[in-house]
Length: 214
Ligand code: SAM
Ligand code: MG
Image (cartoon, rainbow, N blue to C red):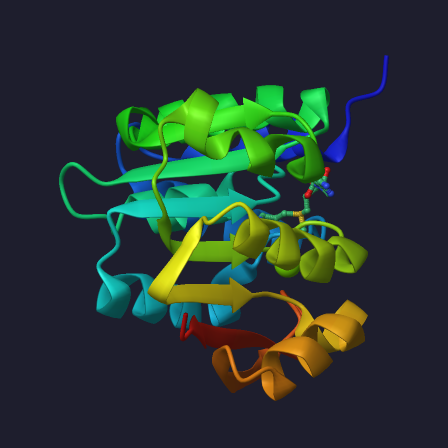
């Protein structure tokens, strides 16, 4: 039987990355994607912007929409202060299974709760079933037409507080025009674009950082 790209990516991690070393796992995945097969991780270039936002936010509770193989999960989790927690949502069970192994290989599993399911179903359950009050930081990187409805859902569910940060990937490529329109024009957000490139390419893409003003 043929292997899938996520399985080959995991294979590279198991072969080359040092167990318990998140930077080694990240570096191995970036190398695999640059030299072997492109994959939809946030990648090294935009990953540096993600790192800075995580570090300056110093969040206690983080939500990630779209885990895939766990690349950005490992990046975020490795920068969290002690006691902080990252919930990451993934609706594809094959990807979730790979991601759990990548997260464990990196040694950040104690900080991460990977929940399998669709964001639209899980966001309304965050308070009652997952004990969340509000999120300090949300990384949006799932299907692009879900950024806007899920943001409105998080607002309705009371998951954002004054100062909560939304960080959205791929706002140019593939693009999230309705979401950008919303966060840039709503008086409830203060929004800023970080220009970069689509993972592992020279195509323009970037991250949008939006502060929820309450
Ligand atoms: N954040 C990852 C990283 O940078 O390493 C990449 C995530 S990938 C671009 C998007 C993932 O979101 C896919 O694995 C897809 O299955 C998942 N996804 C898409 N829509 C979703 C939804 N509504 N709920 C949960 N997962 C979703
Ligand atoms: Mg992305």
